[in-house]
Length: 552
Image 1 (tube, one colour):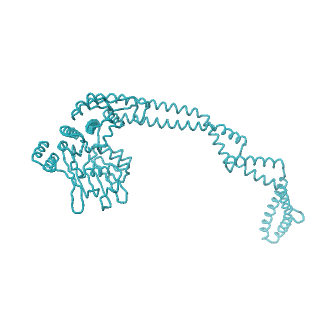
Image 2 (image 1 turned 60 degrees about the vertical axis):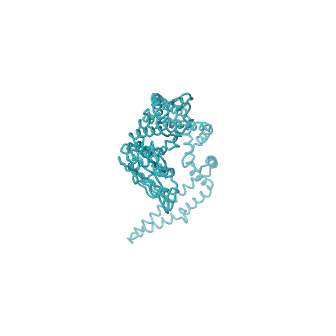
């Protein structure tokens, strides 16, 4: 329930703060007084997009704030999902529009996105304007009416969850089939690649080893000559280092008999002698090992040519990458080999989920069909009360070829205001008064079946007057026994039925024109109803008539 509304610097409003109560309230005012401004401001805290033109001229910011009693709603899960501090009783929705074009939204002083504000606002207030009568031509709205009256909220949610799961699985199957199709189209090429890589029998690190060995073979004679030269310089009997070190070692050993420090010298010479002697042996062995092998050279060159060719072909630069490619191709071929089984398994899962969708859709159909006779009868009675006694109304529920997010039914409201006129879709109804009355009846029936948010009727009385207007007012008054109802009206018959009466008016001064909204006391209300009855000049007859209408 909307408890209060605060508006500052919006359109023609300087500052306005007004409290609202439970039950049926009415808002009246002359044409152009600013009723649409009030609704426009309210729509901003319900998440509608803002226009900086709405900011009062000369101001930098406008603020709209609404305080709501939410004790009848369970909003805990919403708050947890959005990261908003939970309050079981009261919520403050605030919107700030800046002249820079920026907009800020808050719930209980926590910054939120416009989408979050709109989501919460839709649960708190339903603004029914004249254009919303177009909903009658929307089959989705018609289905929502039937589901609300049938109490299908939980069943519809279960169905939609099942339908979404089915669609998700169906899309996965389409994607898998596409992958399988593309894979099978390239299967021959993949197998050719796999076989060529398999025949190559590549080894990790092979390319580096072969390139190193090729370098050695191409310079075998130079390497052999250099190794023998090193061996000769180390061990030649005439000028080799090793024989000379042997003489040094003998001399140092003899010196040790008369010179104690020679022991250290001897150890160092001995170490050098042993190392260089071993090195000389290694050089000789390595020189003997180095041989120019034409057959081995041919093999290495052929092997490297194969590796280079494969790398170029597959646009990689190492044997390691070729081995990774080999594993990837093997995996793809394995998937191709098992793809039929994967498709078959997923097809069974899709079929299982589709069966569940059809079962729940059938339950929805039966539930909807069961409520339709009572709905048709009650609606005819209600609309007859509003001055259309010859109304005929029928819900045409037919099966859809395929289930959708809302079930497997097509629903059309068929209507005729006259006995002899053929039933036709509600969308074809020409009379605005007929549409308004039908819409009021529908909403009153939904309110009796579900917990609707507060509702604001913006001139739903279009096209009616007199006794019918009086009855529409009574319907809204009865409506207000279940929830908060606010009606913006030009008709005194409806205005007189309100529990509370608010008046919108403009005030001119030397500098500007401003819009105001105030709650009327009994005497002010009597005067306003009389004005609505007689016009600018309030007559005594109008006052007496107003007293009767108000029960004074």
